[in-house]
Length: 480
Image (spheres, rainbow, N blue to C red):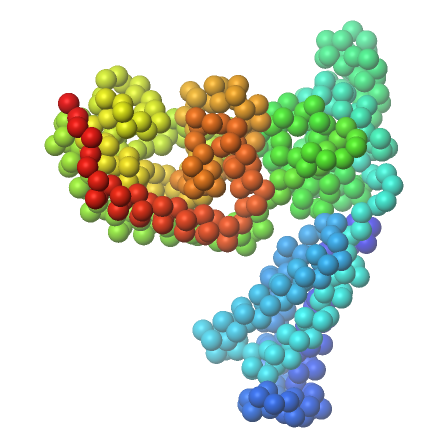
């Protein structure tokens, strides 16, 4: 396969051919007579289909199988075993889906014998087909382009690229700057020194960032070197997502990788970007879980929240909630709300990390902090999409500079939506030890999946139950 589109066409076409062949074969008298001879299978009712009924079964199967194979249809370089196992896994997912479709809607039901036979054929045929057409990485060199919005960084990085560079993709403003960079005076003004600007100015502009999709396909690109002034903003992630969509390797220079998740390995100056967008199915499941978790939590815990509201008012008569600006994904900000647990002394109360010895903590505040009930208003932030149930804990914007000074790669946490809980939280890591917290957060980002989220949530719920039990049987400290 030489281009992403050829791979997609081959993948879709081959899948459809295999599905049609399997469903049609399952309805042939000769095949059905063989199936009757198989123990257990032979006891199932065999219902041959013809005409429109056979066409309906074939179309239904093809649509479901293609939907399940979605991630495999992306033209990425994969090892043989990874390709085969992924094809088999997605085939089994399609089988379960077809069985569910038949259970809930008889109109589109696939007879059990047909479903079993089709599954057997696809479990053998699809892994073999996708292994045969899989995209293989080129052993030497490759077709490389430069993508970015920072002329100086692009010029510096270009000297580290060993492969032949076809050209660059950048916003119109950057392209205009580079077009005149051959002029020594303008080159100096742009910071393109030591010959880098001249070499960069000689490269052709392949278009703006909006054309990156077309450029990757048109030029059969193997690798993209990213050179963005701020690699934690939407433009960077948009380019990265496009690279992964087309199976193109994304790389950055080691000196520009402080805010990027990279493999960190390799002998050259360029390293691979590890961050891969979620599988669409996992992304959908995560958001659906967030909505269900927040909705059920707000509904079930509404009496508890009402009780906390009354307790805070009766305790000192102050405001029930406090608001704080925190950092979201890509460096954006949002307002987070918590039940107030400290005495109000100033308007910009920053609500520091819980400290049971702090004399500003109220009696009610002590209890809701110990039992994590002060976090309940954040269920609303999850429901509206500002947060997720699982992710790196959102940090107060005023604390970001301090934490970045202690952990220079702190911005790597910005690559996903912040969460109510996360791997750092269940392991007891807090902002008091930013390096440890960052290590857990980065590990979560690299391992993130819907099922990993479920494990973290289960452990966090258990920890909350334990803390609640210990608090109820314990005695609160004396307060003034």
